[in-house]
Length: 351
Image 1: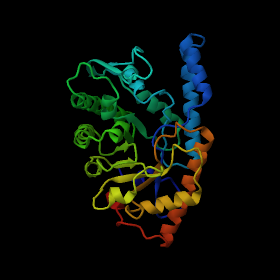
Image 2 (image 1 turned 180 degrees about the vertical axis):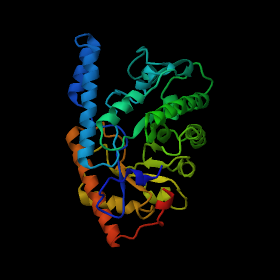
Image 3 (image 1 turned 90 degrees about the vertical axis):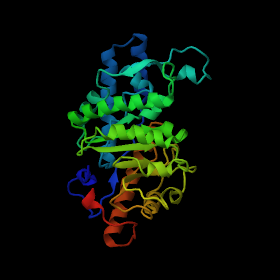
């Protein structure tokens, strides 16, 4: 799907830098209180559902007020990006709690039979957010490599086989989401940043991409900011947008990722450090966007935070987004005036 479909009405500039978030948003303390109460039996399940609805409304409103072009539901219904999916995937069971807290396996979902799915995972979540939002909603979903590597495989002979089965299940969910009206779907792969298996990721993404309709934007986010062992494969990923981290102090120099490689897809260029509570100044973010434009055309660059905003409190998160939107608008104006020389040529005719 062309990025122009996300350009808001009455956009002030000829150039358009698409602005969005990666996925998660800060969860309010009262949401944890309601969840605890419902888990203890002091509150009803309906109370938890109402609280998660309200938290989703607040996250959407904050993102829209900040001026984003595409928003998410903030992942307000998810306490964890992996455990959430144990509720909808048969054979993918929540941790049994045995073992000590330092035991990695004890905190991982267990794969107790060949994974399968019979019910939608995120369709109701998307439909609720889509009713509330006035901007396009991006659906974020934990990717197959992370679902596999953040689990104890048990009945599978290899992580590779498990990841490919998850890719097939995600392809089914992508079709469901597309039928429900989703026009942007993103797979999140923190596991891939930790353990770069580029060929396996390529195969998983290819299986999912084969089921994505042409009018749906398909992307993936790779965490870590360190891509030396993955950059060649990432350049070949079958996605419309590849979202990467560049704002944290430990992130790669963009030159190490982009120089000498041809990234034909759009790039989500991280300009906000999501591990720091200190809000970057507008000028700092402008400088980061301009750094991205040394390697990417304006028609290719999406402005976003490095990763999900869940680690932050609501106030620094919203301030960071407001500064990001202002910085992007300033850079758009400078591009219109010819004050910035950006890389590449106009790709807008190709989306």
